[in-house]
Length: 218
Image (cartoon, rainbow, N blue to C red; front, top):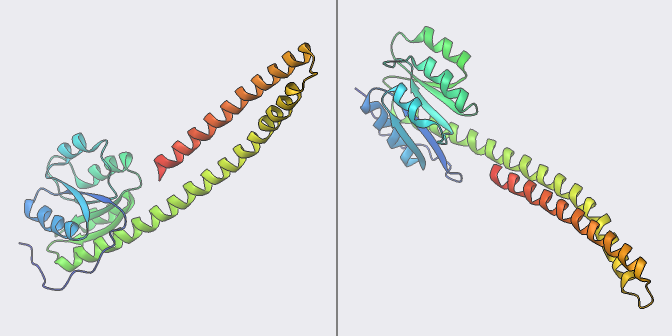
């Protein structure tokens, strides 16, 4: 039976939308953890069976997961290995029971972020969630910065590529606009202007693709 302290839960950051997975065959444990996540502004999904979870999660987004080590149908460690293949950046907190020490050591090799031991208190989960949120927040800030830096470098490079066709189009347009421009030269200038406009279009398309890719990573 879970015990609940009356200590006030530590405040958690809510600046970023975060999602968590809870996997335990004990409904009471799942609901207990879910209540802390809800208070912290973290969306969550509950699964009672690892096979059901693996069949349902692909395509969802998770920042961290609470996984019971002793699960039916599939060991929590095996589930976590498969889960990390789908979500390599997701942090995993293992829920351990009595006699799980050896498996907890193995969990470190899987890449466990933390452990919470049954029977845990509300403050234990609250502090763990606070640390997870802060870690993910810092990670997202860093990722955001890297994406913006990359986008700025690409944009600067493409801006340089825009100069030549723009200069060519402007220069040959002025030559073609003169009153005494021979017809042969006019055709030549028109061809150059057309070629440079096509080059310009390619650079713009390239720029749009990079901006779209950067926006999707933010």
